[in-house]
Length: 302
Image (tube, rainbow, N blue to C red):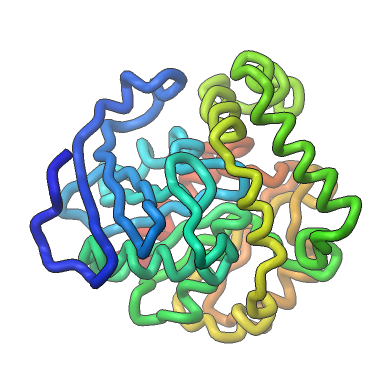
């Protein structure tokens, strides 16, 4: 693996190599990707990249997914954009350092990734947990973010994840479910995903299943580590934004009331609802999702 020949921050190392993602099982819809990593303190953060002299776009996945769970999305973006897809701490091939796995820590990881790769300010696209992390990054470092696309972030007082107690039966149940998934075979997980999400494209199932096997259960603690309230984060946003909301009747997290509140706190955001679509909009409504995102990216990237 080649070393990246460029000055980098102290305690950060990076390496970069090319892989042929068409040889990855279940990835026949994916583009050819570069594979790399940076080391932040004692933690190794893995990322994938399409490359090219194009405006950068970073994709941040949701909890229990990994970078390759974006599946067809980078394929749709790579012609016009340099797409970077990191594995979050505790997910995919990334580790967990002594700093923990909290959302604020994850935002700092993306900040270091942008600076280490010497990216021009990217548009950051996040799904679920990744959307929350993207917003925290933009709130903390507005100079590093050109725009945000937030897909059904976990915001709202009604959500269990925003009031999760590590001593509660709910936390123990989620932990046990994560352990059970790690013990299942890939075939069993693929069958489970197909049963739960019969409308997804067939190419989605393998990466979803593989991500569940790779997930470190310790990543769950990220939801109970200290973080700024989401309203405070949204109030700090100044960049253009696109908020994609799923249908709460189909598992969406953002209610219409919360969407209205976000719009009031963040005037630069455009809210686009996806009726009768569940939490994973980029999987369940891939074509309209891509059309909506590309329009925003082209506008913001000039």
